[in-house]
Image 1 (cartoon, rainbow, N blue to C red):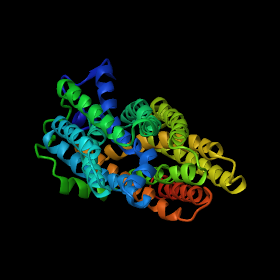
Image 2: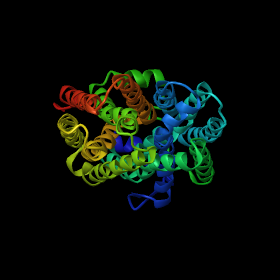
Image 3: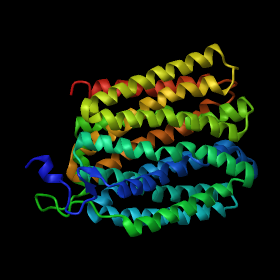
Image 4: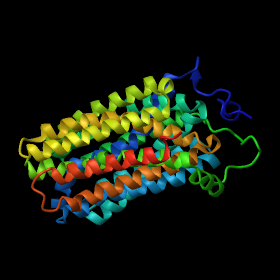
Length: 410
């Protein structure tokens, strides 16, 4: 049986004339945005939280790195659950958990309690990301799915990339607790919307009549050279961004002695590069193919990180602009790479798209947690952006090596 026969759209699926309906697209965007927004909105507040809780910034940094670890584990679990029980119930439960834990984080009185609340928050916030990708693959073939993921990510990225700006403003005006109040209200609003409007897209049965089982499907995916290649390229390709996420505030706020709000402004500038990369993926993935888009995305990342290293070495005291502007080029590459890597990963075994999305998401978040936490130790005693720049280049080079080793001969 052909792939299209196996995974074709269900009756009543949210498509109109071969295109995703606008309301369904907007809902996917809102659900997907919760996870990355929750991740980045508190970044400008890390120094303030460290001061309030009288602890080392490396401890408060666990609100980012452990969040990423839990986001990784949650995607692994929720993707499989959505294959077994359906996409809709998993997403609704995740949004409810996100709202509850956001308000709990707002009320914490210690760093340990905040870290615990953030870890639980990650389990809920991951639902819209991993299950939303599986829903797109339920409805479209591989190259079209890459294009649709590109459109969703491009529109989604506005809020997550602007979140540090919003977080910086909220922190400056009202304190860091206001950021968690915002997350709780936003999650609750999306939950109500999804409860009213979200359809079920998962095929009711596999074509051979058997249930999808996590163990067998995960084993088949991990044994696939193609799946490993797509998952690694997507994960390692994000390493430079997560290293910058973990170390950028230290460079701007601590070394350059700028405000957290200014860091948020500069961070928001990079969103335009990511949006442009997503736009290119949405427009050209069907024409050029998934593998070619991954290759060119990685080329952009390597060039951008090389420029960052050169600037950090040659003009170390010039200010934030020369450090941040190459991030635009890096984010163009990341925006081209990620939707195609995800679409490639979830297309290896379409009947287990949720499990594949979960494993790929797990790999991405695990690398992110490692990159974000490791950079805090690499930066100890640093008086310039050079350690951060070199680390970012290393991630980009390793990602390119994974592509040439696993996907270039496809």
